[in-house]
Length: 231
Image (cartoon, rainbow, N blue to C red; front, top):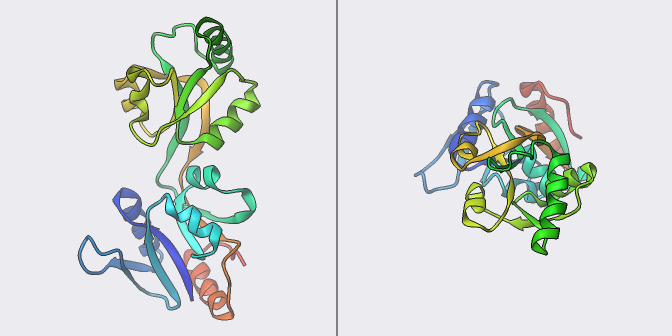
């Protein structure tokens, strides 16, 4: 038997159920909307587990679930490469993790410009330029690769776009699909400020215990989904 982590709410959940359903693996919520349970039809040996998208990487890493659907941004932020195997990109849930600055910074168009502005900011204010984000690993790796040093990351778990207006950060790095919220908060994306293009992905845990029964179920599931075996 294999445990499949499925996003527990919102558009990501519905798109996930539609993707599996189109391939003969039909999952339906049981009980009320407050009950986190799903029944599966069309295949045996697969148990869906409803989790938040942010919990799925953690449960993949610990081996609590064998498979899980969540955004590549969350996996790349939370896990190291060998903790999961990518099975299939699902073609929905697309969004970009981007670096954005205030519109009034008319001379800051690129990451190199930001690097220069950060050095000037530290000289003028005595502390490093603050970038609000919840994606610390991805942003830090990106900025290090670009040679940007005079900054500090400020944790933001919600309403990141408002941190500049509120005076708690000078720039942000956040997920966006349309850019409308950025524009509404008078922010713009740097021309080379794309950090990561995310989408929903089906992942397999490398820590989960794969029994003979589980391998057999995975073989049937892989055949229905037309994906490669992870084991």
